Length: 135
Picture 1: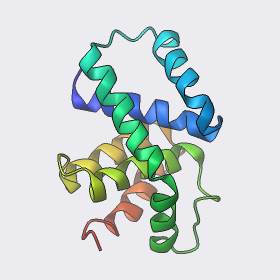
Picture 2 (picture 1 turned 120 degrees about the horizontal axis):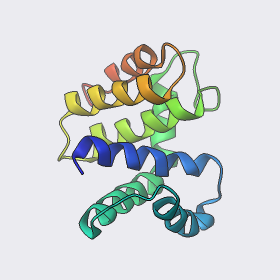
Picture 3 (picture 1 turned 90 degrees about the vertical axis):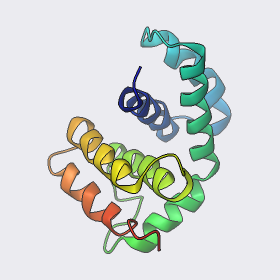
């Protein structure tokens, strides 16, 4: 499984946060890997769950940063798919030294085109451009 597919699985797992309490996530994690019949090596499973956990630990901080950077949009007004994609990308831009900013933005735009509403790619790109300078 390549990084793009791993990122997509992280997005799908992180998306469940919108529908379940944090304390339910361990059970959701088990269901996630069983339901999708994912053939995932243990190292990939650890990478996916580890990164998802690190993002969830920073959700309040990431949402606060998103709310600061957006004009006329707050996290509670965003579509759930778009918000999840933005959370993942902002985490990668600001806190994951292994992911170059350009890669995080490009991958987020691709996820938005695949899973978001019409125009989501441009929406995500516009917001993430504000994080590109990490300031």
